[in-house]
Image (cartoon, helix red, strand yellow):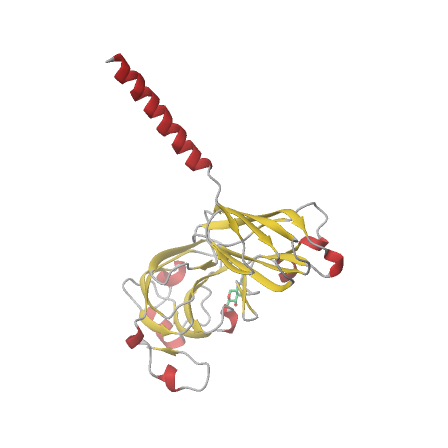
Length: 295
Ligand SMILES: *[C@@H]1O[C@H](CO)[C@@H](O)[C@H](O)[C@H]1NC(C)=O
């Protein structure tokens, strides 16, 4: 009996130690010149030849922001090498979040290793996406990037990791606009919309004037880039309703944008799913323009 107990105790200690170890475990892998990172960890880049245009996209869960830290940096800034961290994503020259919706001016969204005075650059993103650009001329030069995701209780601008899911955006008494971006053609179904002022307005009146003049509304946007200010409006909604709109947006990017005046607590819930190939509007194939369609 005693033997059994002793070994039981040992096993439980061992399993506890293993559990601890897995909690402390740090994921580590090489970083590629073009890369996408979705986990915490240490990512080391070593140039094997001159690499002049590299970028890594980093994405976290909607309710997380990303902390990035550079270490073991061996680059030659005076020879034109650089490492820059960007608060957001840049894709095909367009930025997410747009200049309009990001809380910081554009120049403050860049952290430049070469011009930063502190040893080792650190940066914390304002939303669940960030990226790093780098150019390294001489072989064997490189750096290590530590990625750490942090909880964000008030997510505003969000890039969805997946083409399926659901989300609720809440804006409590803040004059701020938030976008939820899905970079796939999707069907979006709004399941709940609650905008403070709707109780005071006559819905018929609203139907005539649309949402213009209303400081609180939800826009559905479609487009082929990531800058929400360059996308076209698919629908404006400024009624408090439930079980309302359902739309197929056959674009590369579909966005739910909540515009808030700060006077109310606004809330929008929605579900989305990827459009099947046969659901993609036909116009897309025939059209010469880089155009997308909506049903
Ligand atoms: C929110 O967006 C609306 C419409 O795009 C704009 O008129 C308003 O100034 C924006 N508010 C803020 C705080 O950026």
